[in-house]
Amino acid sequence: MRSPEPPGFPSKRLLFTPGAAWRAVLPLLFLTMPALSTTQVRADPVKVWATGAYSFSDELGGFRITGASGIGTKEDPLVIKEELNSATPVTLTIRATKPIEPFGKAGEVANGVMYMRIDVLNNSALPWVEFQFELHEILDQPSVFGDGLSFDQRNKTPDNIWSSNFADFDRRFEPYDRLLFRNGKVDPLKTATFDFLITDYTPRWTFYIVQDPRIPTG
View 1 (tube, rainbow, N blue to C red):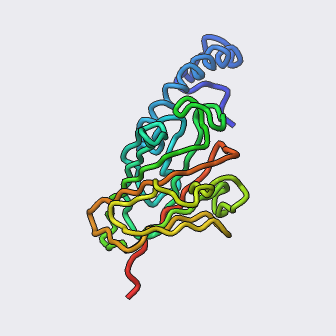
View 2 (view 1 turned 135 degrees about the horizontal axis):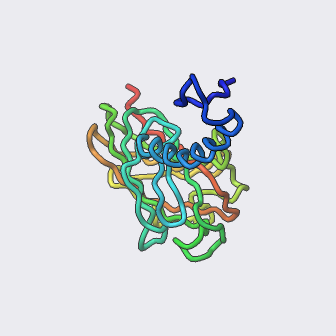
């Protein structure tokens, strides 16, 4: 335990008793704590970007978000700009920052309908020949068909899935929700764009997208 004598007070003679001294100092300590906390937050790298009714975070590491915009409609999709420094899977954390209201107005509530555009810079020094996205409602547990979260699984002939660098895609809903882009390539220091729609008919406050760049095997 600390000495009852507050730091900075003369050691030879107190103007009042130790108990009275602490009663005088404690309010000042509480007043200074928010300022210290703000300084510490500003010193850390930006980890969370908020746009529309959601926030996007690179807090789980392995990549860096460099920008976020949009509200999540087809006309104004959620655009996330990223930089991947390796060819290993990374996880994007998404949280609702406004009230959840299924099918409510995009941007004002988290409505479970998210038109997404992800721009990914390949800073891994290796070419990518495929790129996969996988949804998780619970971290490290792939989403399943019945949880309501998917890459628009109700639409059997989607026209909103596209990539600047890959000609084809493959969607899987069982035993996981995955979207694989293939037949293309992303060279080092080049950027690839991916468009898709995420739907969640039982919206959660937090979910995840695992992003997996694939490199040549031979």
